[in-house]
Length: 395
Image: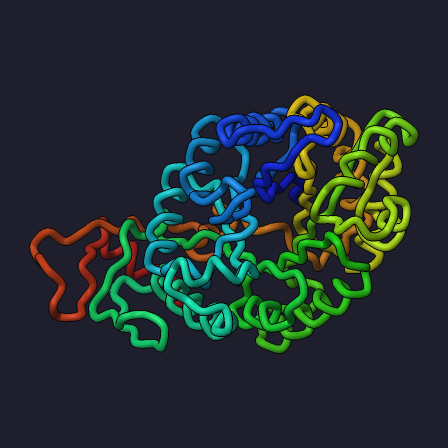
């Protein structure tokens, strides 16, 4: 099972110090948080995508490329990539490039985005959000699996004989998660393609996410990708950790009370009772996280939101020390001991290459310089060893 953290890239006033960090400070801080994530033994760092204040992460591939270059084993991913307001051709190109630069340490999470003003900035209408998501991902899926694509849809200009470059590393696309807060349509999309489903698991009661995840599992099995237990599920969560419960509650309360995401509604104690929010000692966070398996079944990825609401960098780094040093080692042991043997591990680039090629070397596409412009619809690529290519199983 993979463990890590995700950020929504908010720039929020610190209610204790009264200071609001600059964009430069938050960008530097998020890099340090990602590096610390690897340092303390966690597996995954994820960053959201936003194009409006008070957020800074408008270019996830740029940020994640830098983080990948300054780490050695950390999987970098998004939380989420907007499949609606991004052109799928650019997504195919940018994330394939990131995949090459990170040597396969990347996947991505796709989502619709729910900020209405952003859609027209990119020439789209939020009322078309769902059909946009379906059409754009269908194209992205093909761009990563077909050397030459002909496409005609409703929301973008047609493509004829188009090749997205570079081709994915080892000709194996990055693994895709579909992220959702509340819509079963996105769970259906994930199930149809046999992709992963990530429930952000913040703000809402467990009953809400139980319905979404069970629906995804049922549809995953319906489409023939495996049993319900074999479906690929990721969960978010929120945590604030201190050495003891009293300190955690005392330290986090002013941030909870002033954070715009909590809506100045229920008390922190009520919110902790009704949602996945954990505020407490390492053992209390362990206990709360273990309940996720009871509610949702075995799953493959657990990410926590820990740097939001104006929390200063030093506090976040201290929490990561506790998360990596005291919380996750126990969770790894406990969850592995309880895991059904039918449940697969989280997909990685290495496991996907193995699934596609077995013991054969992976295909390494290289342009055929003799063909020039591709006007025939034939592949503009040759393979380094056609005999090896011919030995691959039909996929």
